[in-house]
Amino acid sequence: MAGALAAIGASVCCVGPLVLLALGIGGTWVGSLTAMEPFRPWFIGLTLLFLGLAFRKLYLVPRVCAPGTPCADPRTLKRQRITFWIVTTLLLVLLAVPWFAPLFY
Image 1 (cartoon, rainbow, N blue to C red):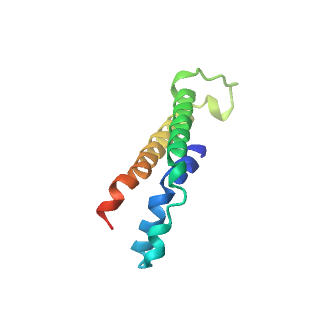
Image 2 (tube, rainbow, N blue to C red):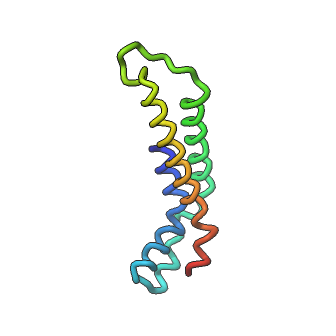
């Protein structure tokens, strides 16, 4: 969740105007919606940090679960890993939007 919020913060400077333009909302003020641009490197760093911590927890740290708890079920770990890779893919696409946004407007 924290990684997703950081990625949204990193791409808000470019995703916001792109979404507004896609909705047909335009004007010169749309180009000035870049107030968050100076904070973009910080948000990218936070996104990568949180993804790294999630990867560490899912793959590197051994799990300690009491028998009969949901975390003891191997299907739970598999679902968590699948969710992690889906979210990671979406976040990396979201982080790449500022580089591809100029192609659309």
